Image (cartoon, rainbow, N blue to C red; front, top):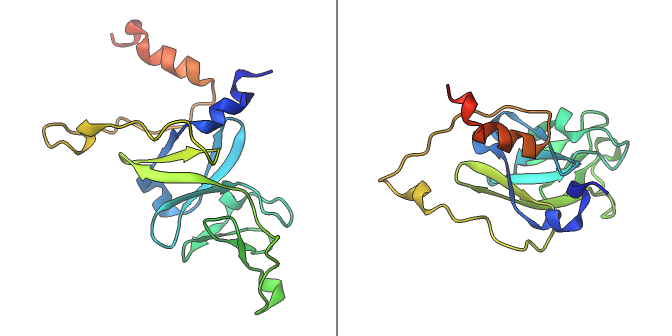
Length: 165
């Protein structure tokens, strides 16, 4: 079994994307093998859903965000931040069946990043970074880019002193 498939890892918080990235619309992200779509809800807070429409499994991250809901690019089904389908264009004014939904995940903005926990009961809270709000310190956003490799390889790369020179 892959280490990342151990259920305990779903019970931790992960910083997945800079908050400003969500301003341009839905953002795809894969966490522990789980395809997610990240977007801002109606209050401007980040939300995380499974990246698939419950109708025809199209990727919601290819759709649009309006009024805090993400709309599927295929048939236009629209979901709120809790994963509930709130609109089906083909159904007119009728309310969608409450069973029409996609999985939603715990999601928060903190320290300039979107944090996601794939389980409803995290083992710990998001780690405290008191320096983030301390005026004696400053936050420097180095970069954000997708690396298609194992997280341990990224960590090793950052600690390899040969790279500094």
